[in-house]
Amino acid sequence: MTAQQTDAPDQEDSGVAPASSTNVAADSTVKPVGEEKEVIATGGALYNDGSIDYAPAGVQFAVQSQDTGAGVKSIYVWVDNSAMQTNTAPIGFNAEGRHSIAFQVEDNVGNLSAMKTYSFIMDTTAPEVKIISAFKGIQMTNGVYVPADNKFMIIAQDKLSGVKSIEYAIDGGAMQTYNENILLTEKSGMHTIVYRAADNVGNIGGTMTNVFYIDGTAPVVNIGSDPAAFSKDGVNFISGKASIVITAKDADTDVVSIMYYIDNGEAAQYSYPIKLSGGEHTVKAMAIDAVGNESQLAEYKVSVDASDPSAYVEAEK
Image (cartoon, rainbow, N blue to C red; front, side):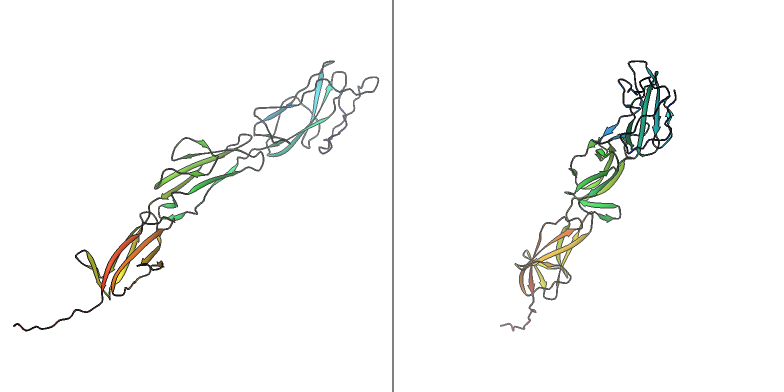
């Protein structure tokens, strides 16, 4: 018996009529094949998102059926938009995207099953993954620097079956599942985060690497004068012409700001020179580096001697 329907069925119509037969039973009633099985996937696991199956590369599909009466004679399939063909082996697909298999089963006395259509989406592409630093990062000669309290977020996207998991490892450690933002317990120095993502059909992306440096050290501030002060009995003396000089250095990144206070005054941005009036003063200063580390408050006490010395001649008696 040969089925007469040779055109590919309309995949949008779920009620496609079965193909006609030249060997239909005498009562002209087409009976369904008994105990018909659905399409079975081999060579890989499927993932269903609640509405459709997703398949990884390499999966093949077999239409299996049995008949409790005369037995199954043939299985006819329409793959995507192809013409009808007799199915004798599992069906494989190469192209990513949506596919369909319409199928109909004939038994040995000419009974035809109702036509059914199985649709799925082949997903052969691994998720895209990237790491985002809460702090933008400061580019220095040897690499990118972030503060010690910086957090890293890993984001993965998959256009088809969806992201199943994200894994990462720190400084050569074992891979672990990513569940929340990453905060390193180690502080200053170079660090590496490797990461990857897998989708719901088992596609695993390549391992990505992020190398960065943590600047956990605050700047060091020094306060002095130009010219240098004269110390006497533990007191620093400068003239009214001298300037207060504030310097700050950071071991890793640049110093971006120096703030200073004179006596109990308001904070001001440091710019050379600073002149002081006569008398005793206390100068305090702090610095901030490029990743936000703040130095300790440095203090410098000085006495400004603004009066000129006097000389006189005294006669001996």
